[in-house]
Length: 158
Image (tube, rainbow, N blue to C red; front, side, top):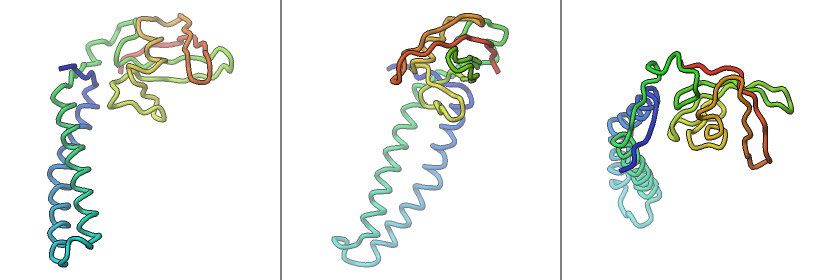
């Protein structure tokens, strides 16, 4: 069973989603199925089929969340404060050497990744290029749009 690395915040967010799906969404969907069943003929009852599909999707997501949470390896970023080497959990500020544009990325688990919020997956090309480097280093990242070169300005663990 392969462990899934994640931050404490990511673990808490998945736990909250699981709680919501089990304690709020599941009973609501069961109620919808019950109400649709009361309308009679199930073969042509669109409400019933929509509720059953919603139930299937919800139960599938619950199973996925339970699996991820059971395999979670929560990494305490606070223990890494003071480290100068880029590791899981680091927030790295880089500058694109072509455009001089600065960007900050936090390296997180796959389930937490959200590029719009500056969180990149541990398995992403930029994270793989950054792991093990330090401030002042230059990295080459192979992206779908071609190779990009970044200089690492700052590494912090927050």
